[in-house]
Length: 429
Ligand code: 2M8
Image (tube, rainbow, N blue to C red):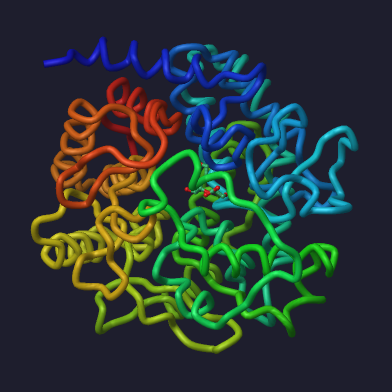
């Protein structure tokens, strides 16, 4: 059997192979630009093997941030053309550094938490604090951007405006919007299905909605208030909001280490937690769900996003244990964790975010379980995740039943988070 050291060596080689001077592409051909939450996860892995390179990964990501504090979901590499949609679909983006080109939406804000982790992996406290001090303001602005510009009415929960913002692009949670015939006004091309098997990628109908929303959002200059009346897609995503809350907690830890007041105060945290638990919990499902802000209803689709309250620190140990046990129970014959349980309509064991297992999601669940003291549950998932990698390599995702590696090969976050799971089997609360 391949040893832990060999696995780490291979993972490091994957990251080096995907290195493009200052950023790490998620995979060689499928995703050639810099992605937001990918780089956050990648930096955690890099911090174990090359701390300055982890710092650089985050610096490069931050160079794409906007004047309003948003950190976009893609920072484009101008030299690369074989990805669609390119920057021409996102005109007039208000990037702080005008030399940069980016997309016009964001992604799950795991970055502040990653900066906390990367900092903790620097043993020299002075160096750690110096780095945190440089990043504190942009990270606070990033979180505040969502609180200021992505909330509706009195609720503190963050609205996502595109399935790509969820990170789980074609999740069956979003079928309520894809099924309605929205299409962009212009033709568009796809590159993804020329690189990997179309059966494991989103459908044409999914992409019609994605590109329709890109046009709508860009036409209203990225201002939610302007397009909210028109868009079919405005959602409180259970994973995204859990990531926001976790990042607020972690940024507050950074603030405390710097002797600064909290980035998000106790009252705001309490209101957010109350809203998340009050608004997104579905008693019958025994799981958190997503909320369709336009329709004013919970979206009746169960996925692994509903477990991410465990990662976020939004559920206690008892609740978390019940939730994850119920999720396992309804997923017989599946490897852990299927992104969608097989009894949920729309489940597909090979199709991207509709069933396959993802290393990033497992990592989030593992870290959340550990922080809650559910150590053996976390260990079980950690061991199963590493077994999958040992068997199949650093794939983008894994068949929900057989574990066969799917999507892009040599996938950066699978490699990076494997390094973290091996080098840091446990994290303290
Ligand atoms: C996938 O999303 C991109 C669009 O952002 C795509 O399909 O082209 C998702 O899995 C997303 O979560 C991920 O960040 C990105 C790069 O790995 O790929």
